[in-house]
Length: 469
Image 1 (cartoon, rainbow, N blue to C red):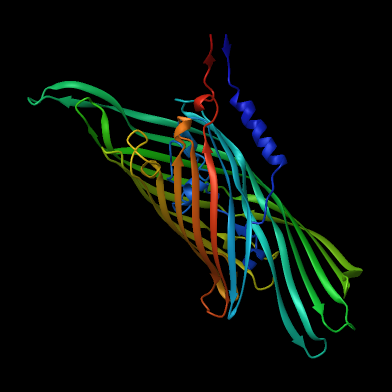
Image 2 (cartoon, helix red, strand yellow):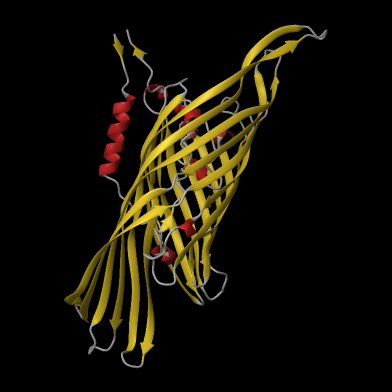
């Protein structure tokens, strides 16, 4: 009797289940997320987050790269990636400070790839931007005396994606000579591989904002302005990846025991048309001991903005060294550019403009021993460290937004699964500020991300025909 494992049906079922139970969660506590599209997300998975969220040249055999659509072709088999995060954000302005904790899902992503195949289909969901803030100030006025102005918002944009990647390999013969210089044997090896990928993306979601003025003097009515922005856009991201064998060493049995690999890659998020439907409502209310009571809806308005999102590109390089005792070391760097200044700012708050965004990332990882040689979980684990700096996207009166993020990661292969499945952890420390004034609004945040990379079912051989007696 012959049975077939229907991974495609199972993968689609799991994704639909994830979509129907998707809980965006608040994953930012930043007042700066009030501006623009909110706080933009890199799209990096937990397994690559520890290396500075790199994605252009980050190509792994067992972990799914959710930034470069071409990277899935380098996987050895069908892969699932997902996880969640917890964050603690501290907001400071002058001598004042407040702190909050938030959390939510990071992503749900699949790559469907037959073992030994050259192509891979990818699909999933991940946040593209997040908004979450609740701040207030006490002010005084000669007429109304003391009053409180408060800003609150939540929401975010989600990106659903579907793509395909294909890899081509180049081979050559490695010749082995005797002491006399005669060729005694030859071995065909894979000298280089190149992949191209394309991904279709649908971005959608709502950003909700509220601005209210609560006047202490009961003679005056309080006011509230509620804004609901509904976003949607359809776009395309393309990517490429190239891996080349720079150096190698064979033992007496013609077995490859050490190697040096060079990887380069690039990502281009093609410019796209983005639609924003905005609803505003002005209302007056009276704050009583039982809470605020709306007195009247003074005014409401609707307007639509058609925006042209700019093209964003990323280039990266990575070097991997594998030694004969099982040690693996990787180091890489990448740069990303997005000309946000090409977009109009008429739909932003007064005094807020877009500016060109530049991001630079570096990272390194170390695996002390291979699975076969490791004697403990510490030897077979992978350790990561990374740094990411971004400047631009939004400019306020104090200056451009600038963020620095230090990250560390740990990946533990699940030995009992007989595959590349792993448990992944990433930690990050971020500082964010517009300008450099010590009296300005400053943010410090610490985050912890936990997730899994899985190759489950039937010893992880999805899309492989099974035969049973």
